[in-house]
Image 1 (cartoon, helix red, strand yellow):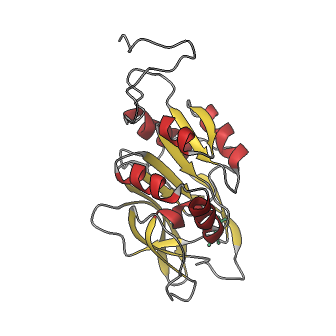
Image 2 (image 1 turned 60 degrees about the vertical axis):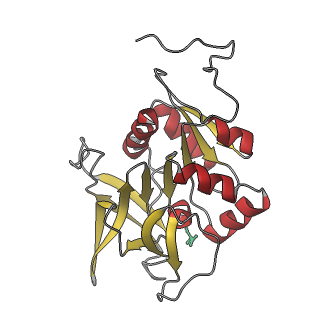
Length: 231
Ligand code: GLN
């Protein structure tokens, strides 16, 4: 299928102020918010998964992308940096208007409608409020702050990802509670207190409690690149 005419840089032209669109582009342009966290690892995984990947630190970067990854790190710090770089409201608007967004660990917390501390008390911190879940920070407790688990994860079609369980690295990870009606659980972890939700999708938003950029398995990034491609 013929795409729109290309500029010298290989980018499709678009009207000023219009959101970037991938149209027939084979490799969607996916940004990784580069204020804190595993930016390089995400860029590598996105590239492996079929995207053109760029770090995002400005509004101009954000305007160009078809998808955005919010990496792990420390959610309060990333939220404050977003505010300081005057990106919090712009990112909020773009996610609310359908930008494919993948939040991992702290990035998933940022996306949530509300966040609590590990004891369930409200966490006072800037959030994007786009994902209809409550994120319980550091939910797995101190003794098991970091662990790996072999997880059955469903893909965009709701079926288990081809290739078997995914090795998932949890680092002071949250879990997701009280999902709204539009939220699908794609993976859970069994705890003594029952199964806890650790991967969710809400339309154009994907979120994982663990770090999919560690461990070399690009399947969740590939699912996300597909979301970005669909626009
Ligand atoms: N515990 C961190 C937070 O609450 C998240 C940890 C991570 O991203 N690995 O923001």
